[in-house]
Length: 333
Ligand code: SAM
Ligand code: SF4
Image 1: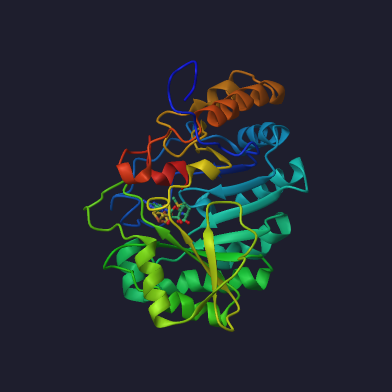
Image 2: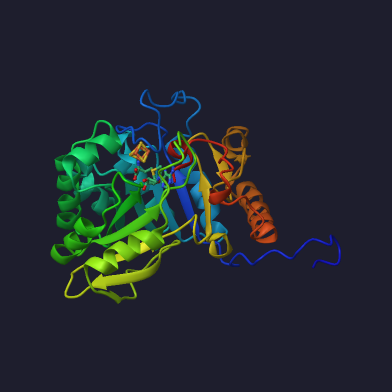
């Protein structure tokens, strides 16, 4: 117990908070049932969105506080014009920065090579099913063949590692075996992610990764593996005997991972969040537009990082169904 407050001490957040997720747009060319309504969410206006120059200033200030890994996300990051130039702008801050992207992959066949050239090293592609009909049902409008083309283009471009994010929905795409079979053929790292009930939840989609893992184990032998170098919450890495790729599980609901969280986020409209569940975030955009320089931004970020370390594990957890302050498509996952 804390002597001052009488409250329980926070569980520790790692002192090294070194990972920034930048959502560059709230727009998306898919409408995944668990992420967006069919009609989409009302898009931010051009003025609401941080320009690439503004995002670069924020990123440079974050790097000055010790951030050394940046993931670009969205909405879908590949739908924003100038994305390749933006990767280059981030790379110019410090060529040692590790830059990655999370995308639905639909436009990767077009962009993978140029992204790699601009400084992107790794890629996460969201593919929730390998069955064309199920993929279509989940994304409402996506064609599996387009994302598979993007997956292969990522390998051809030399992006490494290539990971696949699978959000598992009960009775919809809850057979993990086809993805495990894919790891036999391709050096791909499949991550089964527990669905977090943020939006549009009919109350029946959540399924624990314990069940997903048990299904896999009853179908094939899994060997423990160290997995690819990870930045985030993936734990429990496995490999099917003789496979080229790996399998891991991200379990935000059944295995709450706040205590090991090393990340901060900024949304396309300039809200910095030190936690997915922060309601409003800190307004970075207005700060930059009112003339704050990198030194001033650095101070603001440091203050927020101190607050994150102090608050520790005292955050609402996904399983409690307390909503994040915005749509996932704005916060960027
Ligand atoms: N559009 C890109 C994509 O789908 O990869 C990037 C943005 S998306 C919001 C980032 C990640 O969040 C995706 O892997 C997506 O599947 C995941 N996601 C979205 N809503 C989620 C939810 N309710 N529970 C778990 N993961 C979710
Ligand atoms: Fe778009 Fe990604 Fe949300 Fe699907 S999960 S609707 S691809 S932002």
